[in-house]
Image: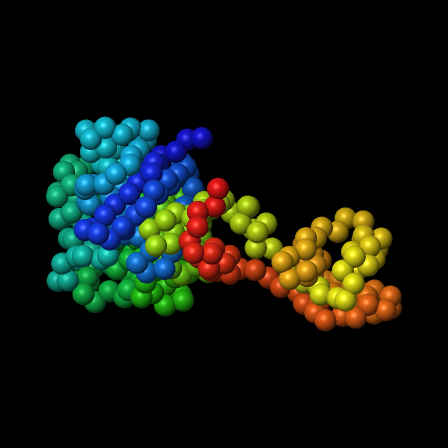
Length: 306
C-alpha cells in the first residue's frame, strides 16, 4: 500500500498530559482522509507533530516513506498545511499570498494567480477584512496550495461556516482532489460533513486512534437495519429464513434480531410474525449514521479496535 503519510506508535506528552498515545495513522495517495474526533481529542497535536511544529515525541513519523530528520524536513516542503486564517486584514487576497509566496521561497511569480484561480478567487480585489468566512477559507486553501504540494492538511476547516459555505468548501476539496490529484487530510468534529466528503476515516479519542476505515467498510457498518424483538427468537428466525432466502441477520446482546437492510419489508415482517402467533415487542427500521458509529466507539472508553 502506498502511504504518503504514516506514523508508528506516535506518542506526545505535554508535561504529565498524554496528548497522543501510540497513534499509528496511514494516509494513502489520492484519498480524502477524514480525521474525526471531538475538540481536544488530539487532532491538532497530531498534525503539528507530523509537520515538525511540536517536536519531542516518541514513535516514528514517515513522510513519503522517509523518516530521518533531514528527509522529514525535505518531505514537509511537499505538504500544504491550513490551520486557521492568519492574514493581513488590510491586504487583498493576492497581496497576502504574494507575501507568503516570498516567505516560502517560491520564485515563480505566476504561482499566486494559479492558486487563486484554483479556488475561484482570482477576481476578488477587496481587502481580506471584508471577506466572508467562506472566502477566508478559500484564501487559506490557496495559501496551502502554493508550491503545488502533494498533500494538504486541513485542521477544522469548516468551523464558523454556514451550511452553504460548508457545501461550497466540500465541493472545492473534492474538485481539487479529483482534478489536481491532491491528497487531503481533513479534521473535524462535525461528523456529518466528513461523511459526505471523505473517502477514508480515522477515529481519534483522548489521544488514541481507535480505528481506521474506508468509505465502503463504514457504509457496511452504518447501513439501514431492522430491529426485531419477539417472545420466541428461534421461531422468528425460522420463519424469516423460510420466507426470505437471502436474508442476513445477527442477534445482539439484548436478544434482538438485527436484519441487514430490508427496511422496506417491515410491514411484511409484522404480518408474518403476527399471523404465526408471535408476540411482537419491537419492530423498527434503523439507520446507523457515522456519528452513531463514532459515539458507540467512544462509549467503549476509546479502546482501540484490532
